[in-house]
Length: 150
Image (tube, rainbow, N blue to C red; front, side, top):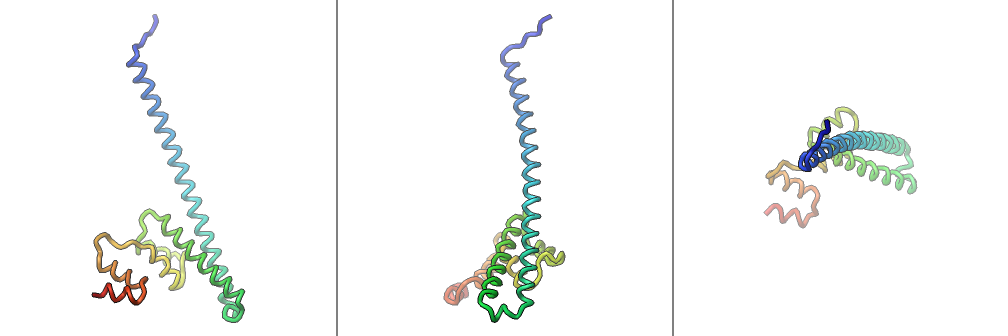
């Protein structure tokens, strides 16, 4: 007994197989992407920890204020830490003040300037004009401050 299929049936079967294969590939890629993000996040936090340790060591020396090279190293280390905090903030799915508070509570960031650097990337709630005005005042120069007050 020979089993025969017409063209529409064959096309349906092939389409179904291709759809299932596509879903499997998408699932595998999603798993890989999640793993890559997890590894990247771990690398960023390790770099943050390393930069913080370097900054603490530089702050403990009195040479920060006296030696130009040490002062430059300190400035570069703090700028690196700011960039790493930005990278960590942008990697968060929902980055809010609560996220920053959790980072502080978990000792991921310490010190007022680190907390301020982290809060710079918190987006204001939609339609929150007073918040936007406060943010604009913080980052603008004196001339633009006068414009926002009027």
